Image (cartoon, rainbow, N blue to C red):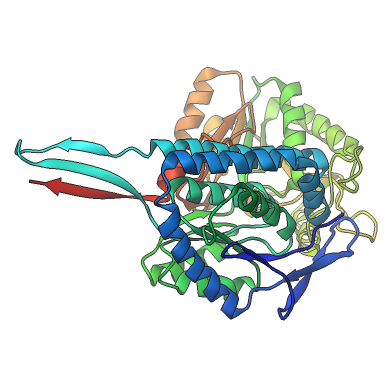
Length: 475
């Protein structure tokens, strides 16, 4: 039901013999699925040396052959979707339908980056002297160290693996210890597709120790991280010592602005589905709901009805619409933000507590009437708790939406094209969805502003993040 786990270094799968390990927990039951081996210091040294050798091999493959191999890996991922989805649900908790959709997105990333890697064009810049030729070449930056979280265990590793490989870089991936099986399935597909040894490596271990070792090594030329802002800041400090390039996709706290002219029924249905997707454990999850006064009561009523209709349970059950939280830490965080809202005058309209004493289940929750200083409106909730508050004017709601230090994604519901245009000009976010939460595709840039990080994944910008420019001037 759940795969045996390995490290993957220099084309070899390494088991737990002679290595420390930690349990991988099923969040629906609280039971141990298996033990995950940790990389030793020697393993990390081997992975770094392998990435250095692998880079020399991979960058010499022409872009057409790299694209063919990546397409083969993508096809293998699609063929294995049911097994990978089951692994993801067992270790992360999300429902099978969401797991399948995520895996298909991950496969598309390998296809897209492989194809886009064929278009890493340079350019010729006309010289001031006709006897001088100025050429700009695009080259892979070198071996990459990548760090990914547990909430999207296929999508985030795929973004980093596919981006690096499409550009001609090698990579050492440290995926989340809570969800190792899904990352291993991606690596298995690349291995089976014929990826040369050392080009992609997968390690696990104590995060602080692994990141410090990988980032400090001169082999690594770039780091890429998806996770919390505090950890991102720490990794940036480590990268600064080597002046290493970095892509940072950090925390979000997405506002949702619902205007009186919106299609309210569609807005409610979309917001409920978006909020409770993956139990709210999404960096671009709709987090703070601001609803114009004239439609506020109807919106709250519809949202509460939708939250109560959610079926919470084991993600393997086809009737389940929301699975458990991924770990006990998230349960504690939900208790804390709900208690804080109540202490500030908030009202729990539905939900508000844990479900049972087995696994990490929390009720889909709606809270109203809290002040703007409540944690639910100030900090990233990362769970199934929806704070809803009214607003009067456009300028007021823009100021409130922009008041937090994060700026990853934002959303709005309106049928007024003038309002939509003004939102695009004034909301401080890296991505804006109007009448939709679909802001992530392989071909579009994904990333934030302010303390949500910098750099982009996806789109041509995501490929360029793994390339540098070389100017060649020939007289």
